[in-house]
Image (tube, rainbow, N blue to C red; front, side, top):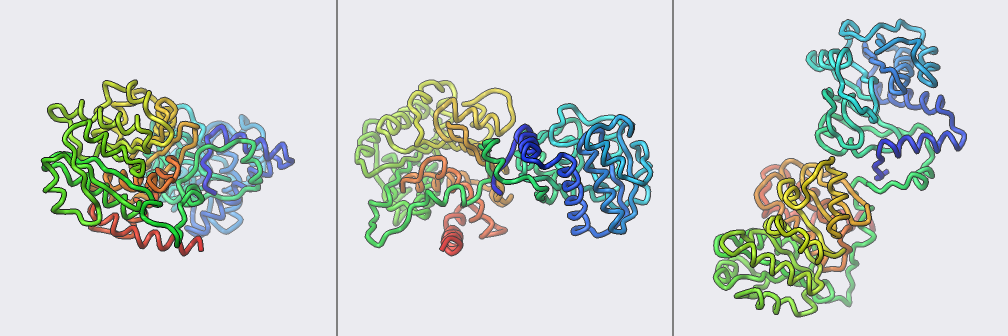
Length: 491
């Protein structure tokens, strides 16, 4: 269940299920029943206020109320609007509720230990205001656990953005598959525990709606993982090159180089400016050093065809002459057809020369910007998933937009959202390690999209494995335990 659906795709899944003979009434009954089951599982049968909206989300609420009452919970129900205005399946479910239907107001919260938010679903297109906002805000102020049906009301299901107001849920129950808004901040932070329940939609409908977004999981990229062979050797596992900055700016490149080696590249070389060779040599053992004086020398050291993947940007510097020099080195690597990872300064260097970069980028390249770097190269509106997907299409390379909800998109429209990154990763140098993981996987022949997705997941898993006190140097050292667990899981 790694697919992430858009709101429209979820509507399509509902329609496909109904076309296959599963009525909307049956789907709504199953949805409400499963939400009630999740509530009882998590909280037990407690006094519950159910807040119902005027559409299908509200219809789910009537079903939830009925099942909670049947399980022994005391239930009060309030409706936004008039019961007589309900239509379709929502009207049918309202007719099956034998309790009182109060107008939506804060009175419904009196004596409640739980609140069910069944006001608005993921397709909301207008800000939450009026009585809905008042009651949800009152529930939050009283610190009542809120159970959201589909999404917390006010969270847009595609983007995760907040429309006016959205409450903090303790539990969000959604149906069939999660939506991208469940994984993207700020919506992700408001969902609390997310449960995806089966309401009878057959998995076959996924072929009809053509999901192109997934939760980043090993199943996405493990089929592309390079197998180890007893007949293999270091050159068969690729040779990664990492461009170093000048004196005092070399640590980032060494972090990337060590990560590339640890993730499996057979050889790794730091391409070091002459003035920084001694500084790099004092810290490196298994990673080799190759000095360069100017752009022509850097190009020459890449002429060896065995040096097949290049990482540029970490600690590269944008000082006097730095932008021109860095642009030249990037374009040289691209011109030679190398697999390329561009990070940090290598992205910012092209902020005023986007077209020259885009002309040279190809499908075996990965860009790893944070939000600021991304905006310099890809200005424009849109939510994070839309912007990343459009950026990949515009530049013709894989784009990995970093953050707590990292999005990775390929030029062909595929995208994943990463969900395993702990807050410990907010530490200097962790992005350099991620760039190194990407480079080491490219060196081994992993396709760019799968390499970026794998690197990002491994990055988060290594941080989780190490735990509190993490610094960037710990990430590569924590990786063997993660890789061992992966190997055991797939044996």
